Amino acid sequence: PYDEDGNGYGGGNNDVETAIEIGKRATEHGMQLLVNFHYSDFWADPGKQMAPKAWEDMSVDEKETALYYFTLDTLNQMHEEGIDIGMVQVGNETNNAMAGETDWEDITTLFSAGSRAVREFDEDVLVALHFTNPETEGRYRNLAATMAKYNVDYDVFASSYYSFWHGTLDNLTNELQFIA
Image (cartoon, rainbow, N blue to C red; front, top):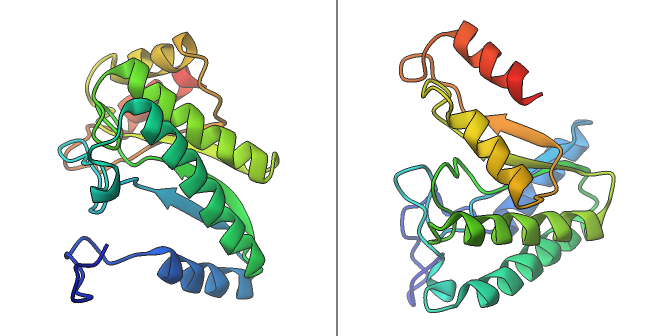
């Protein structure tokens, strides 16, 4: 996002135009692109899942619609530029919130809106949901059960893993094998 004077807010300044530039480079080098939607004006992680300024006063139903159309429109813009998209990540490190929502029924509504947009764009593109903190016993199992409870359509259960914070590789392997 940018302020009225065109200055970035320091959240990485990665807008759709920049993503298209990056996507073109990847495609030129024979790679498929993972499109990672944070659905925030800033980097999203477990401690910050703020709604974009444009969505701040929206209800969950309004956010669902906005998220769907933003996702679909962005993917279509990328496709029109010849970008080869292989996977779309709906949210980033969404352990307990996304786009300002903290209730799991609402979060999964947003996940489903993103997934629907990806499926409409191209049913062969993989849909990823992204979480973190695999070191917390039972966290991933509970998240997977929540996705099943709300019938969220996705292909990849993605995980951040930083060995300093997130425990052993054996634990990560055990958690992801259970999810698989």
